[in-house]
Image 1 (cartoon, one colour):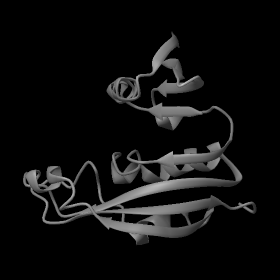
Image 2 (cartoon, rainbow, N blue to C red):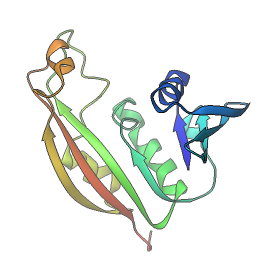
Image 3 (cartoon, rainbow, N blue to C red):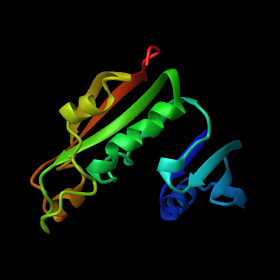
Image 4 (cartoon, helix red, strand yellow):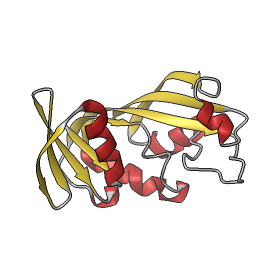
Length: 160
């Protein structure tokens, strides 16, 4: 298992929440022990990530956090990093602008945008859409009038 994040605070939160222990640190690469399992965690630039190919990935907040104009480059890293037949569980967000007028992060990632970004290299299955506005008060406090999370299962095509 390899975790990747651009900011070290995410790693520190993960370690704190899961009571994990750092075994080794070298050049932004962490080896972590969690419940008897060894995990690798990379803090750095996603766009230069190159650790070979994986059979599965989970994106819970990365694609919606980056500037929308950087999304095609992000997807290219996923294409390079996921083997044919690999699964990607992707969580996308849709919301109204924040009270300060900003559109993100997290930025909207609509169903149409998911298809535009991924359909040439992945089959796409919509799993569910959840109204998070009344579940998480953060969105109302930030000035949103609605906030949805949609989950997709993408499978890397073998012919692309």
